[in-house]
Length: 468
Ligand SMILES: Cc1ncc(COP(=O)(O)O)c(C=O)c1O
Image 1: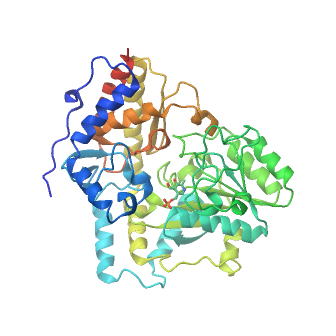
Image 2 (image 1 turned 90 degrees about the vertical axis):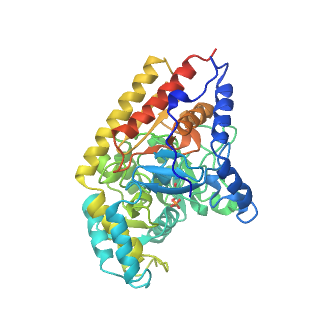
């Protein structure tokens, strides 16, 4: 393995003087990017013969080329070319513990020696469930292996409890890749239909029309839209699945009263409310978006960060909702559910890593990031804003406040891509996929990591500000 190289100080990144356009900025930065990634390119080419598309998940196909990693340590990750990065990608929001956290290493190592799979429960599962109850205010839990499995079970459960087929989801919301929620995830402007009556757009090939028809779509922060769907479909809506803080479109915050209003509306229509806290779970705060907003749903889905980097998910609910699981009315099953390795990592994550002191530290780092980035936005007169909550945050390249997917749709993605390239070339790995994703600050980041983010952004902002 190559020795990790020191990150390139952003001040030494060559720039055009002054750039003619955002496209020119991107072209220059992509060239620098590729110049630093020869081994990644070699692996990508070789992988193309053995891995479909040359990657292990389609979202790893990034422009200008996928980045292959060798390892991670603390707040840093290292690519196969030996470049070091401050990891603010966080594995799409899962790496809240950072990398090689001693508590996670010890928990996993200990469990590996004792057996990694039985398909019978182990005591750690009780500790994990009790801790989830303490944090999220829901009494009963089960486990799964990915966010997709958790939201699939939640949708099944809402249907099983109510005996109804229709569900409501948010336009622009992502809840994993099972059929019922693969509707209107990121529809194009010419597909979305009128704002007060969003179209139901299948988000992938392979999703049957019959399933798409069962998933109704409403705008985020639009209570009237949900009221209309309930009115038009009396006694037919099983429930609604929503990220309480929307994180598939930068970050969109719920307006005051929106989530409480949803719960009331849905209950008055005999329907249930599921919060998808797969992303927000431990990252929006110790009790997730539920803790931030004070609204407790009927059913909740967790995944990503709760496993400390090991694949695990959880579905929690009220006595009433999870009673249908307890009685076997809905069979929530899976060979690897409650897997002892995952439970050991999850227990360590909840009890030893995501501590009150860790959240205090993350809060201070977030404030430092927001202040630094906003200062550069203001200094360069950019039409942009910083939106951040807990360990998550992003720069949104529009001056207008964004309250739903329609507002997000109009944002020019090239600014986010150029920003990503600047950060990458300056030694900070933000999540790819432009305007959609957010950074994740882990418990192992420090002030110097945040300052590197801000320094790179300052260079980008200056380049943007000087576009001829
Ligand atoms: C809000 C949300 N729900 C569900 C999922 C699906 O999780 P997984 O990729 O673990 O299946 C994701 C993944 O990004 C997500 O962001």
